[in-house]
Image 1: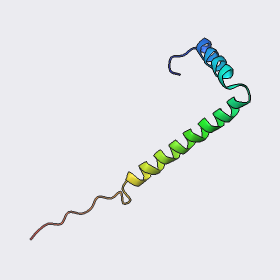
Image 2 (image 1 turned 135 degrees about the vertical axis):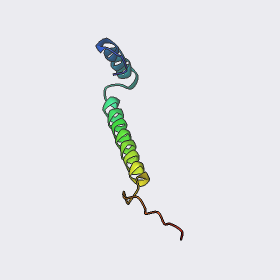
Image 3 (image 1 turned 180 degrees about the vertical axis):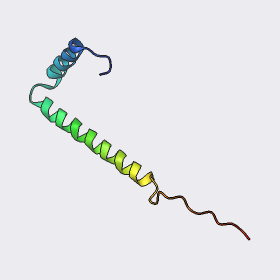
Image 4 (image 1 turned 90 degrees about the vertical axis):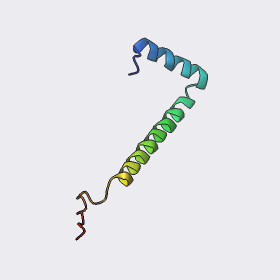
Length: 64
């Protein structure tokens, strides 16, 4: 993911652990997960609103 190896992920996790502490990290992860979930739900709702309700094309009226 993002071209990062295991060493880079361990370094990032260690820096986060030093900055926020062990007690704060689970709260941050929970908040991040909830934010991602809300974003995905909003994207799904938006795509449902943009899709046509009636998938059959309307018949063209001819002028006589």
